[in-house]
Each structure stands twice: as structure tokens, then as C-alpha cells.
Length: 277
Ligand code: GLU
Image (cartoon, rainbow, N blue to C red; front, side, top):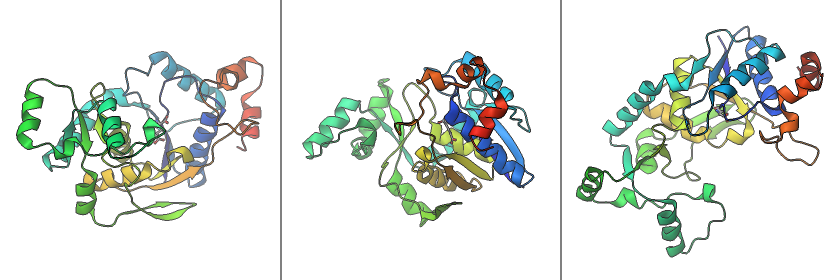
């Protein structure tokens, strides 16, 4: 049976782009006589707020979207993510990283690189090369650290992995764009990547539908699924809605939030029709 989900983070009110994504996931489940689920991705306590979770549920209900099971909130499942992290750690696939952003930028500059955007920086592996004694010593002093996945080691163990998108077809897993991704941060015990993989498996999701902005991270997810012995879904990355100038609809464009649209007197039926559902 097909099981899809919509998994927003409650960091703001939903806009039309979210509505499209939720309707897309619901339609994909309905077409196959399957189930559609709603999951609230609220592990980042620094950015998520309960009032936005409430807003998401109200907005989706207004749109007429129905989910088949109780809403799952990631904030209630932190133990599951910690267990997954521990499994990876026990297998020697994680290492503590003490670097600050500045340390990383300096290392890259020293190597002659000139990254323009912080997000695109591939970690140069400084802490991967730390001798074990030094690692333990720094951890013992209480120095803050993140946990990174040793991607080369993980890929070597996994062998050639693939994932499949309904439109794009078969993709070979590559971590070249990500390097050693952070799976637990100093301020957030678990990453989005880890939580998403653990939850999609726990909820029996068979088809992950989401915007094409998340296409690339599927490489990370496929690798984690392998390392954690999780079932592998299929993916369908859909187009992103854009405004007249071609910009992605972002949460900060208040005029396009579903609540603003509703307040302006537009009906849910009209929104669904406009979006093609
Ligand atoms: N929580 C993520 C977001 O709001 C989406 C996660 C996913 O669909 O995999 O961007």
C-alpha cells in the first residue's frame, strides 16, 4: 500500500507552496488508495513554535486535507533518533567535530578555496584526522562538539547505492556535495536528516513526496537508510511554486500565507483548484 506524508517544520505559517506540497502528497496517496500522514518536524527548539504547529493543523484542515493517523511530532521521538545515532556511533561511523565556522573557513582558505556561500562548504575533515587521544581529551574537558558522519567510510561499507525518483529515475548515491554531514549539533541533539529517515521508516512511508529543493539531500537519506537498516521508499520530488518574478514562495512573504488568503475571503475550493487539485 502507498503511504505518503507531508512533513512541515513549524517555523512559520504555511504558504501556497506548502499547500501545493501537502495536496500533492495527499493526492499521491489517494490515487493508489493509500494513506496520507502528517508529521510535524519540530526538533529544532530554537526555531519551532507550538503556535505554528497549531497554525499548520488549522490551515490544512481548512484546505480539506485529511490525514489517516494521529499527527506525529518529532519533539516526542528524540529517544528514537538518539538510538539511531548510537547505532552509527557504535559502528565507528561518527566522529566529534569541535570546529567553529571560522575554523572551517580558515582551513578552506589555507587550502586555496574560496567558498561564496557557507551552506555550500564541504567540511575539510579537520576533526576526522584528530588523533583519538586528543579527541578524548577535548571531549573530557567539556568542549562543545557536533557529530559528523564519516561519509567516505560509510560509502565504502555501503558499496554502490541507488535511489529512485518517479520522474528522474534511478540515481547513484554521491556524497560529493555534502562530505561529512553533521548528524547532531551542539545545540540540537539530532539532525533533520536522521529524524526524517527514522520517522519515514517508523511510519511506513513508501513514497516520499516533497519539493525539488530537497532533491539533493536524498543522497544523504538513502545512505542513512542503508546504515540504519531501514526500508527504502521511493521519492517524487515535485516542482516548487514561484511568484511572478520567479522567486520561490518563502515563509516570509506574508501575503501568500494560507491564513492571509483565507482572511481575504478566498475559499479553500478556489485555492485547491488554483493549485490543480
Ligand atoms: N521538514 C522539512 C521542511 O519543512 C521537510 C522534510 C521532508 O519532506 O523530508 O522543509
